[in-house]
Each structure stands twice: as structure tokens, then as C-alpha cells.
Image (tube, rainbow, N blue to C red; front, side):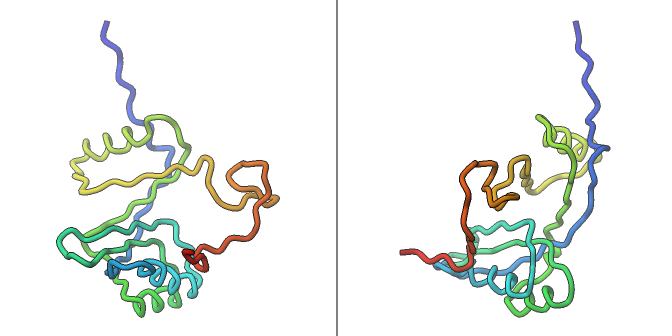
Length: 154
């Protein structure tokens, strides 16, 4: 007996486009931290960060971030070497997490004739980070203050 295939249920999600900012990185310890520190000092609350080496440029890498809000953050980004990417487009999808949601979303995009050069996804069902009462990720142990921009390797 043939089973019916359910239509993707992506309509319950909020979808919005966003600018992705990119900057070149030197392939050396601390290069990424310098770029992120400049944005932090301007008050940026980044929701998306991807950094990688550039296979076509030995000794270099690239970092992509989003979002930047307001003139202060944009000015700091430009000063740190960031530019809005004209070739990489971001889409943020917010909605309830459930098994198979990524397959549903990419199926819908393919059906609409959209070809993906890349795809990144993350679920925030149990986010890491300070929780109410100083808890980390639902763990019952209290945590102290942690600033990743001031961590140094020993």
C-alpha cells in the first residue's frame, strides 16, 4: 500500500532575509578573536558566525557574521575589514524545532527551483549559555562569569 507523503509544514516558521558580513582572516592564532572583539566592543550581538580557511588562498581565512545593527556596529565592522557579502545570502528561519524540519525546508527550496551553494542550521532547544539563576545549558551546577574574548591559552 502506498503511503501519502506529507506536505512540508514550513508555513508556521518566520522567515527573513539578512545581510551577511565577511572579512579576510590571517591564518594565525588570535586573528578571529581580533575581528570578533572589534564587533563586541561596538555592542554587536552576533547570532551567526562561521570562520574557515580559504582553500584558494594559503595563509588566509574568512569569517562570516550576522546580524549587524546600527551605525556604530557597521562602522566598527568596516574598520575591522568587514564588507557586506554580495555573493552569500542569509535567510533566518525561526519556528518550532522537530525532527525532519531541515529536510522539509530544503525540499521546499528545491521545489521552488532554488539551488543551495551551502546550508547551515542550528537548533536552540537547549542553548549553551547562562540560564536564569546562573545555570549553564540546563545543568544543575551554577556557573561563574565567562567572557570568551578574554580567554588566553596557557
